[in-house]
Length: 77
Image (cartoon, rainbow, N blue to C red; front, top):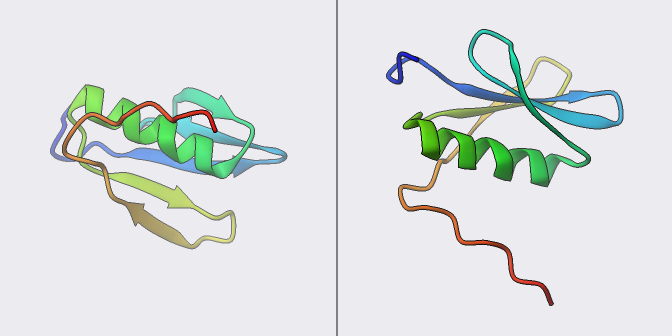
């Protein structure tokens, strides 16, 4: 991957959210938006990619920050 130009994309696909690489290849699928964003951020960190783009399905996009340090696992309440 060319990390300077690569982006991870998160987009709705019916009732789920898909995480895709820059070329549109699926990387993961999640049941909700928050999980898909978290998965995309984790993949971006592992691959050294600095940009995650969230698509809302209406053509609107938003850049999601990718943490510079590894993400901590979610704690169960």
